[in-house]
Length: 135
Image (tube, rainbow, N blue to C red; front, side):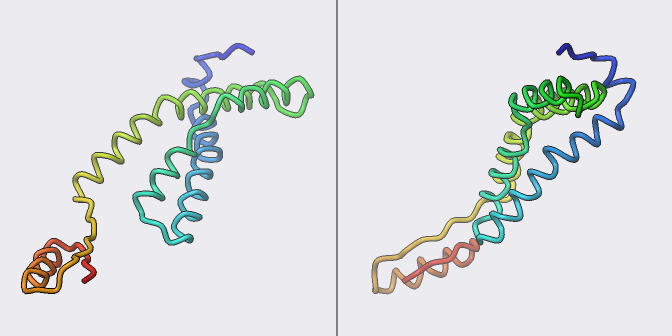
């Protein structure tokens, strides 16, 4: 099972389709499931990016499919190219996620354990920053 790099230049549409089918679909499904479970968007994005990478197991399945005659060699080339791209891009996606989280100013909440006047001031201060507070 040798990879032909010229395939990427010769058939970029097939590589993009493979990228959309395997990691794109996995990321979308993971994102939807985590959001349906009512977790945060940051957690959903982290899970989606983590599961979007095509693993090395795809090479084994692709080789087996080619040996059994159910996967043409052209499809195996597209699968390998998509896997290489997804493996290479995955760390960059995690960096981008961290950058967006910092840029968005990830908000956290607070629990205030006092009942004096400072509790009201703390709550107002947190509310001004968009962070929920429980008294």
